[in-house]
Image (cartoon, rainbow, N blue to C red; front, side, top):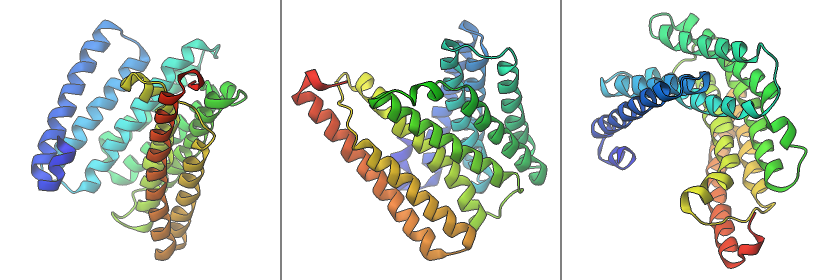
Length: 281
């Protein structure tokens, strides 16, 4: 409803997003009480970040003030979910402490960003970079990338996303970027497109069948939209760093094409599996 309301103006959309994020925070409060673990706590803090960002938006603050909180929501949610999966793997005794340290740095950076933007942005960047290194070291994708078919595709998506998360963290370590400037565009697109959308591409073949209750056939065509996403993002961020408006525009256009291709390939895989259930994986 909030997405639809954006067409009517920012005020009703902000109110609906704020209400939705408040409900999510309440849901996580219940989940944490039922299962008190590091991963539920991290995802719960992520839900609070979404709520804070939406409250800032609702209160009339510039969008640039809310964006880091929205990024924190997505990063903590995804990292918490990946932490849960690492329970299936042997890991060092210090791994949970390192993960908690990364989360602490990221949240601390967000907490002080508005009052002390130089320090806040750098702490956020340090937390994002630490998360990228932790995920690259401990995530199950390091093992599944050696398999075939869908497990390998998902792992490639995850590992590529972690590289972009590191890039976004490194850019944030340079300090707060002027809103709508070249580095601002590069930093947030590395996180929102390079990291988050790559996660979506990797998880969609797993999540969509579970949500839609329909099989979905894996196809190597999935690598098409993944490759286009990252190639276009390299063009866009390269254009940002070189201050080339043409490169940034072409990169943005091709990123949109990658999203459309992803939707087309996903629908095609669902249709193919529906026609040949025995081939669905």
